Image (cartoon, rainbow over all chains, first blue to last red; front, side, top):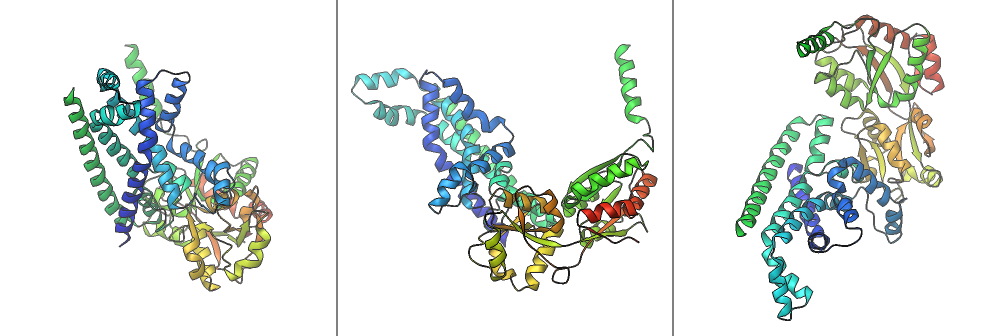
Length: 221
Length: 252
């Protein structure tokens, strides 16, 4: 029954997207929480853009960039990597759309970490990298977890950008939301209803978990 | 006092019965008819007909919208199956259904790939890695495309390479952005193509019979005007415009 294929494909790609958003997300969140620099507002704006722009518009930008005739897609095509209309486009769309949420949540977490601890660790001889991994990150961990869950939930629910850049190819790029849309278009109403229930269940669980983790982070101060 | 007056004015505006002749006829039509219907609507207006408004999309999507209550006076489908969907639900005005035009399939590609596609399509060459068609599950252009590929014994070779799109113009767009190597669209869609060119047309005898039925909907708010427009579509002025766009008019 391809309802299971669709669900597992969506969960796996969302997991991959969440993993992908962590390194740049941590870096951006830390930068925005700890550093004043010229162009900071620009960085903040760009990071928030996928949150505020219509998802299909973001998807169109990704399509123009990554199609075989686009600047990035053209280069990748020459080394044999297809992006658009493959699982890679699905992960790409999910990562781009989830990153702003992750950054916002983690940034708030970093801002709650008392910089005095970091300063003290510095006076005891720890390098900035060591301070980050042994002081800042562990103290902000609940926010990191909450951000990851939020990014994951956003990735699962991602539709506009996904359908633009990955399409709705059965067994290849049909995620949960895309399948619900397509099944409704082609008259597979029972399957659409089943997927609706699955996605509602997943979203509910993810949001509950995220709220729980965020409140735990709040309690720690 | 003033706010009560405003409320009354707003209520009157919303509740006022809409005039018959000034209210546009809403036509839900297959997206492949986009340009030709625009021109026909202009000719209709020039001939004294009223304003016509179009809701264009994949015929399967339109059929579902109609069944879910989308306001429309006329429905023109790209295949009989989607018209049957609407008929079976009792949404069609009895006796108003007519077959309007016929069409042909065409395989298209971008100029740099078209020679390759023309030569290699029949052998399902590996170089044609992705083929865009309307979703073969319900979009008429996709259903026709599948029938054609099955008839030529090419369906099993192409099935894993199919990129199903929401309607035939989306398949055309996919080929024009270079995201797919070729697409199966209608011959008439070439008029709307900007960079895609014809690899080859499917002769009527080699492909499925493509008929566009039209009908007045029973929920039409503007039945008289709707019938007038449908009648106009079967007349000589419309037939000349259809022919110019490479549709084959069926009406007498």
